[in-house]
Image (cartoon, rainbow over all chains, first blue to last red):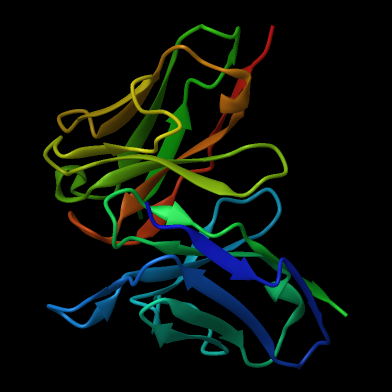
Length: 113
Length: 120
């Protein structure tokens, strides 16, 4: 099974500043036949289900603000929020869908400094 | 509009059984794989099980393999999770989620979840 490890576990960033969350997989999630990374990012606010933000490591889901960006390949990935807004306070999870048994990172709690 | 509505969560004793359901609307249900994901109180997300659009293949997390069974009734647009030999550590909100397609895809729509509590 693929283990997903996020860092940091929590993060405090000032409004308007950049937030960066890292995700590392225990094996590559890059599928060579189509050159796609099977990696997604989700946002979960208190009392709500998760919301898909990014998939294929860097493709924004429809309706997601362009301040959210994903990058990386193979085993190392990053979610970047270019200018933090108050409504971005949430827990963020990465997830691999390369292996039939999907798996999530442990989550990163993002707060306002 | 895509809607996923879970039901069936309850308080059950350790060793007991429970079936939770997820009714889907706004999609061609058979065209998508579906997953169950759970979240224990105050904890992170744990993927539980997946099922293909036609009902196969099925996959399970090691933590539930042999105890839980995922199934679907495409004529009723409904997903199920039969949970047997329940343990205290199975206590969680159980979410159903729709895959972006029928294959290896992320989860693009989620229900609001149903709470399963395992306690004596």
